[in-house]
Amino acid sequence: MATPTGLRLPRYRQDPEGTHPPMDFAGYRSTKLRHPAQPLVLLPQMLTEVTGPLLGPGRLGEHDNDLTRQHSGEPQGQRIIVTGRLLDGDGRPIRDSLVEIWQANAGGRYRHTGDRWPSPLDPNFDGLGRALTDGDGRYEFTTIKPGAYPWKNHDNAWRPAHIHFSVFGAAFTQRLVTQMYFPDDPLFGQDPIFNSIPDEKARRRMISRFDLERTEEQWALAFQFDIVVRGREQSVFEDEEDED
Amino acid sequence: MGRLGSTPSQTVGPYLSIGLPWEDGPFVVPEGTEGAVWIRGQVFDGEGAPVPDAMIETWQADPAGRFDHPDDPRGRGGSGFRGFGRCPTDERGEYGILTLLPGIVPSADGGDQARHIDVSVFARGMLSRVVTRIYFEGQDNSGDAVLASVPEERRTTLVAAKAENGYRFDVRLQGEGETVFFAV
Ligand SMILES: [Fe+3]
Image 1 (cartoon, chains in turn cyan, yellow):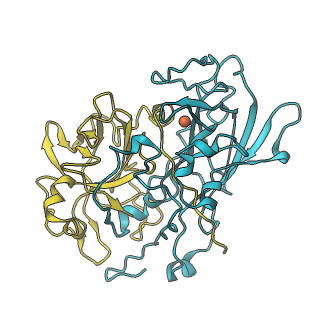
Image 2 (tube, rainbow over the protein chains, first blue to last red):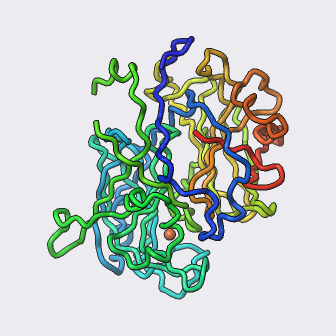
Image 3 (tube, each protein chain N blue to C red):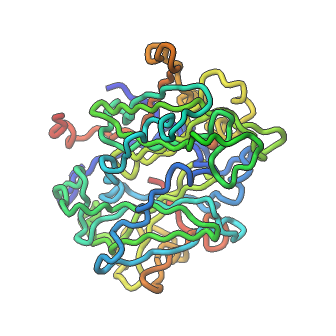
């Protein structure tokens, strides 16, 4: 997009209505006092918005993407491999990009002072992982399947098993924090966080796929979870310069 | 190319402090860097209570107004400036980011933008991040098109006030003095 100063900036498309949750969602009680009541002001995408932190190399330790090897002993639970790609809405891989995860242990307990429900901590599991995407946008974690856990949002409320994911994409506009769920979880129906996504197809994009091919015999099950962040509008800029 | 639907946003939940904080997160520049300022503030909910399980992220140009990023069409600023800060709030809802004042960055229409920092706020009880901007007291903010697009009586919510060792920028998620949040 040429401007009078000759600045050509990519433009990131808005996601279709219903892709993301509303800020105010009655089913999730904590949104009540934490959502803006005033309308959002449109921020045109300028230099600060179309750039973003490129974090990655240098932020990783040796076993950051293997949550089963961060202690001397092995954690309890079902070992799983979680793989996927970080892509933009046009299918372009986002390379060398930091993917961060955190999760409960096999019994659904987080290593956090605020988590007091009576399921034991696992001395061999912290529930924190980091990985870097490769040239195809692929990431991979080895971890333990997290358990479901109760919370106090409504009567007999349980969160379906999930892994929290945080990705940066290539621009401030693409920053995303989401949760990965597991196929056919019977707890979906009563979970307001999962069901806060209005569009059913979009909601289902948060559910990982069982990946028989990536299982490891006598070792681990596998799930596949691609993460898609906003794509760019086509522009002259890309026709000219998208050579890679 | 076929289009792919985006993955929806979900809350960071109450246990974000397991996964997101980094030891050097608050330090966009190392302590002792000449000219570095602290931007400190508190995050409040709609009843004015501090939010102890939130996280602030900042993204900004370097002091010359450049970004070390391939999509800066003026060429990639090679200063190595990280430009990114991240700090969870503590039990009093307080955060702090040590950084250098960003330079002046051109706007899309050829004018200049006032010195600003883009901010994302995440928290339990927020299903998506909210986005705001920090401007600075004592800087020339008069010609900034984004600030001008905000209703006048709410502009002050975007201007960090001078404070000891830097600036103060509180975030009010809702209600009286609600911070202006942007759709990008
Ligand atoms: Fe959780």
